[in-house]
Amino acid sequence: MKRPLIWIAVASVAVIALGTWRATLPAPVEVVLTRVETGRVDATVANTRAGTIEACQRARMSTSMGGQIARLPVREGDRVPQGKVLLELWNEDARAQVTLAEREIEASEALAREACTMSDIAKKEAARVVRLHEQKVASIETTDKAVGEAKARTAGCEAARTSARVAEARLDAARAAMERTILRAPFDGIVAKVNGEIGEVVTPSPVGVATLPTIDLIDTTCLYVRAPIDEIDAGAIAEGLPALITLDAFPGKKYPARVRRVAPYVLDLEKQARTVDVEVSFLDAAAAGRLLVGYSADVEIILESRDAVRRIPTESLLEGHRVLVYRDGMLEERTIEAGLENWEFSEVLSGLDEGDEIVLTVDRDGVEDGAEVVAEETLADRR
Image (cartoon, rainbow, N blue to C red; front, top):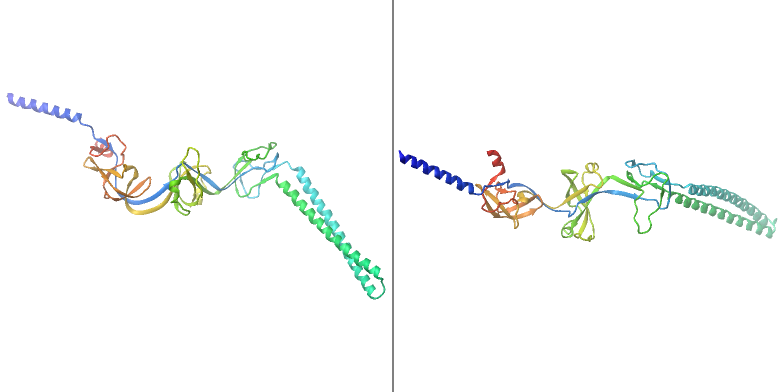
């Protein structure tokens, strides 16, 4: 009877010891796994700082002369057609000059008609006297006087017509002076900002001193993104390359686009990396029309694309193109040969097969070659 009790005691001690030993072992690291799949990979470059949605046409307008605002027929948010009066300064003096010039034209034209009528009469009289002279009826003195009078009248006619043209030019100058007091829409657009009220006095900007525009007009029918690209990547970018635009205001949505311009110079801003401005236009104008000028935006410019290739998430790559492969609860470090890469996916040329499982959460503590791990979804199933 004593021997079975001894064996039971020994077994109990062994179970306790085994449990104690297992309790001292490090727990498996929880990881997120992903599989090698087949898909598309693009080689891309992206902006170094946030870009901005810009309008193809935007006019920050101010009057070319100072004065008091007399008319302000638009408000912020109004959509206006080309040529619409946006602002008018007090210009009664300029209007009076226009009226005066118009009256001068009327007077000059009347004088010209009178002078030219007299010229026609003098020409006919000279012709009659010349005929009489040929018939030996009129003297040479009378004939010369009549011919000279006709020529003088003709010159007077031309002088009067020239005076009328001078008056017309004076009217054009008066109208131009009055137009300087008026701001008109140079294109169809939306009034984004109005800096001024009726009765306020506006002054033009002094040379070298920037001031707020009186009217800010934006054409929202054509938008593009201006973004800075690092000078190292700029050499690979050319007009016409496809691109994708993403906006913080609409996370998860990508707008197809195309490079429309690459700046021919490098910006050297203090305490910032040297960059080249790249302009990217939306391919879908209708979709872009619902966006707002000034939104922050990011661009990915696609340099090269490959379809139906093995790919893995770029975040699963360690330095030196190393990955951690999952095998029966253990991690095995492996170096791969990578092809095209971007921030989202990397092409696998060799080192992995489709369907292989690799660790996605490589930045967690304890995730290394030879570590015992448990997939998070497996833990969830156990619970």
